Length: 204
Image 1 (tube, one colour):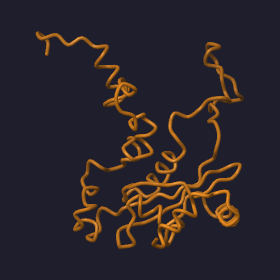
Image 2 (image 1 turned 135 degrees about the horizontal axis):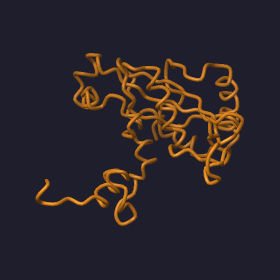
Image 3 (image 1 turned 135 degrees about the vertical axis):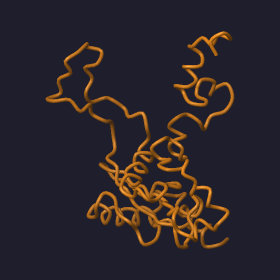
Image 4 (image 1 turned 90 degrees about the horizontal axis):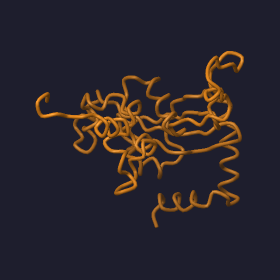
Protein backbone atom coordinates (compact mmCIF):
# COMPACT_ATOMS: atom_id res chain seq x y z
CA UNK A 1 0.00 0.00 0.00
CA UNK A 2 1.14 3.52 -0.76
CA UNK A 3 1.14 6.40 1.70
CA UNK A 4 -2.20 7.76 0.49
CA UNK A 5 -3.83 4.38 1.03
CA UNK A 6 -2.58 4.32 4.62
CA UNK A 7 -4.08 7.76 5.21
CA UNK A 8 -7.37 6.66 3.67
CA UNK A 9 -7.57 3.56 5.87
CA UNK A 10 -6.70 5.63 8.93
CA UNK A 11 -9.60 8.01 8.28
CA UNK A 12 -12.04 5.14 7.80
CA UNK A 13 -11.70 4.40 11.53
CA UNK A 14 -12.61 7.79 12.95
CA UNK A 15 -13.23 6.43 16.45
CA UNK A 16 -9.73 5.00 16.80
CA UNK A 17 -7.53 6.64 19.44
CA UNK A 18 -5.14 8.16 16.90
CA UNK A 19 -7.80 9.83 14.73
CA UNK A 20 -9.91 10.97 17.69
CA UNK A 21 -6.89 12.65 19.26
CA UNK A 22 -5.87 14.22 15.96
CA UNK A 23 -9.37 15.56 15.25
CA UNK A 24 -9.72 16.96 18.77
CA UNK A 25 -6.42 18.85 18.57
CA UNK A 26 -7.13 20.15 15.07
CA UNK A 27 -10.67 21.20 16.00
CA UNK A 28 -9.32 23.31 18.84
CA UNK A 29 -6.99 25.03 16.38
CA UNK A 30 -9.75 25.60 13.81
CA UNK A 31 -11.95 27.28 16.42
CA UNK A 32 -9.33 29.99 17.00
CA UNK A 33 -9.06 30.84 13.28
CA UNK A 34 -11.40 32.84 10.97
CA UNK A 35 -14.49 31.13 9.56
CA UNK A 36 -13.07 31.12 5.99
CA UNK A 37 -9.29 30.82 5.69
CA UNK A 38 -6.81 29.89 2.98
CA UNK A 39 -4.54 26.93 3.67
CA UNK A 40 -1.00 26.28 2.50
CA UNK A 41 -1.85 22.61 1.92
CA UNK A 42 -4.86 20.32 2.47
CA UNK A 43 -5.14 18.68 5.90
CA UNK A 44 -6.31 15.46 4.20
CA UNK A 45 -4.10 15.16 1.10
CA UNK A 46 -5.47 11.73 0.12
CA UNK A 47 -9.07 12.99 0.16
CA UNK A 48 -8.16 16.24 -1.59
CA UNK A 49 -6.51 14.32 -4.45
CA UNK A 50 -9.60 12.15 -4.83
CA UNK A 51 -11.61 15.37 -5.09
CA UNK A 52 -9.40 16.55 -7.97
CA UNK A 53 -6.71 18.52 -6.13
CA UNK A 54 -3.15 18.59 -7.50
CA UNK A 55 -0.16 20.11 -5.70
CA UNK A 56 0.62 22.52 -8.53
CA UNK A 57 0.10 26.13 -9.48
CA UNK A 58 -3.50 27.23 -9.88
CA UNK A 59 -4.96 24.96 -7.19
CA UNK A 60 -5.92 26.51 -3.83
CA UNK A 61 -7.52 25.04 -0.71
CA UNK A 62 -9.77 26.99 1.66
CA UNK A 63 -11.35 25.84 4.90
CA UNK A 64 -14.87 26.99 5.83
CA UNK A 65 -16.73 26.75 9.11
CA UNK A 66 -20.51 26.23 9.05
CA UNK A 67 -22.81 26.32 12.07
CA UNK A 68 -24.56 22.99 12.59
CA UNK A 69 -28.23 22.31 13.17
CA UNK A 70 -31.52 23.73 11.93
CA UNK A 71 -31.96 27.16 10.38
CA UNK A 72 -34.11 29.59 12.39
CA UNK A 73 -36.53 31.76 10.47
CA UNK A 74 -35.10 35.32 10.46
CA UNK A 75 -38.13 37.20 11.78
CA UNK A 76 -38.26 39.95 14.41
CA UNK A 77 -38.97 38.70 17.97
CA UNK A 78 -40.03 35.31 16.54
CA UNK A 79 -43.34 36.78 15.33
CA UNK A 80 -44.76 35.76 11.94
CA UNK A 81 -47.68 38.00 11.00
CA UNK A 82 -49.56 35.45 8.94
CA UNK A 83 -51.34 32.14 8.91
CA UNK A 84 -50.60 29.63 11.70
CA UNK A 85 -49.16 27.21 9.14
CA UNK A 86 -46.23 29.60 8.62
CA UNK A 87 -45.57 30.36 12.28
CA UNK A 88 -42.74 27.84 12.76
CA UNK A 89 -39.46 29.45 13.85
CA UNK A 90 -37.01 26.88 15.15
CA UNK A 91 -37.62 23.43 13.68
CA UNK A 92 -37.03 24.51 10.06
CA UNK A 93 -34.53 22.39 8.11
CA UNK A 94 -32.43 23.91 5.31
CA UNK A 95 -32.96 22.55 1.82
CA UNK A 96 -29.24 22.40 1.08
CA UNK A 97 -26.58 20.44 2.92
CA UNK A 98 -23.87 22.12 4.99
CA UNK A 99 -21.09 21.13 2.58
CA UNK A 100 -22.86 22.99 -0.21
CA UNK A 101 -23.17 26.06 2.04
CA UNK A 102 -19.45 25.91 2.80
CA UNK A 103 -18.70 25.89 -0.94
CA UNK A 104 -20.97 28.89 -1.41
CA UNK A 105 -19.26 30.94 1.31
CA UNK A 106 -15.81 30.25 -0.09
CA UNK A 107 -17.04 30.94 -3.64
CA UNK A 108 -18.42 34.33 -2.59
CA UNK A 109 -15.15 35.21 -0.84
CA UNK A 110 -12.96 34.23 -3.82
CA UNK A 111 -14.92 35.45 -6.80
CA UNK A 112 -12.10 35.00 -9.29
CA UNK A 113 -11.66 31.30 -8.47
CA UNK A 114 -13.86 28.33 -9.37
CA UNK A 115 -15.07 25.72 -6.88
CA UNK A 116 -13.96 22.25 -7.94
CA UNK A 117 -15.07 20.12 -4.98
CA UNK A 118 -15.04 19.89 -1.19
CA UNK A 119 -14.81 17.38 1.66
CA UNK A 120 -15.46 17.09 5.41
CA UNK A 121 -12.50 17.59 7.74
CA UNK A 122 -13.85 18.06 11.26
CA UNK A 123 -16.82 18.86 13.47
CA UNK A 124 -17.68 19.70 17.06
CA UNK A 125 -20.93 20.42 18.88
CA UNK A 126 -21.41 23.80 17.16
CA UNK A 127 -19.63 23.75 13.81
CA UNK A 128 -18.73 21.55 10.86
CA UNK A 129 -15.51 22.25 9.00
CA UNK A 130 -15.08 21.62 5.27
CA UNK A 131 -12.14 22.13 2.96
CA UNK A 132 -12.94 23.45 -0.52
CA UNK A 133 -10.68 22.85 -3.52
CA UNK A 134 -10.54 25.97 -5.70
CA UNK A 135 -9.07 26.44 -9.17
CA UNK A 136 -7.74 29.66 -10.74
CA UNK A 137 -9.17 29.75 -14.31
CA UNK A 138 -6.82 32.58 -15.33
CA UNK A 139 -3.61 30.66 -14.54
CA UNK A 140 -1.72 29.28 -17.50
CA UNK A 141 -0.93 26.04 -15.64
CA UNK A 142 -4.70 25.43 -15.49
CA UNK A 143 -5.57 26.75 -18.95
CA UNK A 144 -2.96 24.52 -20.62
CA UNK A 145 -3.88 21.34 -18.71
CA UNK A 146 -6.40 19.33 -20.78
CA UNK A 147 -7.61 17.44 -17.68
CA UNK A 148 -8.82 20.53 -15.83
CA UNK A 149 -9.18 23.36 -18.37
CA UNK A 150 -12.89 22.57 -18.83
CA UNK A 151 -13.44 24.67 -15.68
CA UNK A 152 -12.12 27.77 -17.50
CA UNK A 153 -15.25 27.99 -19.65
CA UNK A 154 -17.48 30.90 -18.59
CA UNK A 155 -20.41 28.49 -18.15
CA UNK A 156 -18.71 27.23 -14.98
CA UNK A 157 -18.71 30.59 -13.18
CA UNK A 158 -20.07 30.08 -9.65
CA UNK A 159 -21.00 26.43 -10.11
CA UNK A 160 -21.52 26.22 -6.35
CA UNK A 161 -24.34 28.81 -6.41
CA UNK A 162 -26.27 26.85 -9.03
CA UNK A 163 -26.03 23.39 -7.50
CA UNK A 164 -23.57 22.01 -10.06
CA UNK A 165 -20.90 20.71 -7.67
CA UNK A 166 -21.09 17.22 -6.19
CA UNK A 167 -22.56 18.52 -2.92
CA UNK A 168 -25.11 20.62 -4.81
CA UNK A 169 -26.19 17.73 -7.01
CA UNK A 170 -26.66 15.54 -3.96
CA UNK A 171 -28.91 18.18 -2.41
CA UNK A 172 -30.98 18.34 -5.62
CA UNK A 173 -31.52 14.58 -5.56
CA UNK A 174 -29.48 13.93 -8.71
CA UNK A 175 -27.45 11.07 -7.23
CA UNK A 176 -30.49 8.81 -7.79
CA UNK A 177 -31.33 7.07 -11.05
CA UNK A 178 -34.37 5.31 -12.41
CA UNK A 179 -37.91 5.38 -11.07
CA UNK A 180 -36.91 6.98 -7.78
CA UNK A 181 -35.74 10.07 -9.62
CA UNK A 182 -38.78 10.39 -11.89
CA UNK A 183 -39.54 13.98 -10.94
CA UNK A 184 -36.04 15.35 -10.30
CA UNK A 185 -34.57 15.75 -13.78
CA UNK A 186 -33.53 18.11 -15.25
CA UNK A 187 -34.58 19.84 -12.02
CA UNK A 188 -37.65 19.59 -9.81
CA UNK A 189 -38.95 22.95 -10.97
CA UNK A 190 -38.39 22.32 -14.68
CA UNK A 191 -39.95 18.87 -14.39
CA UNK A 192 -43.02 20.27 -12.59
CA UNK A 193 -43.35 23.01 -15.18
CA UNK A 194 -43.19 20.55 -18.09
CA UNK A 195 -45.82 18.29 -16.53
CA UNK A 196 -48.16 21.16 -15.68
CA UNK A 197 -48.10 23.28 -18.82
CA UNK A 198 -49.99 22.61 -22.02
CA UNK A 199 -48.02 22.88 -25.24
CA UNK A 200 -50.33 23.21 -28.25
CA UNK A 201 -49.11 22.78 -31.82
CA UNK A 202 -50.71 26.00 -32.97
CA UNK A 203 -49.04 28.24 -30.43
CA UNK A 204 -45.53 26.75 -30.40
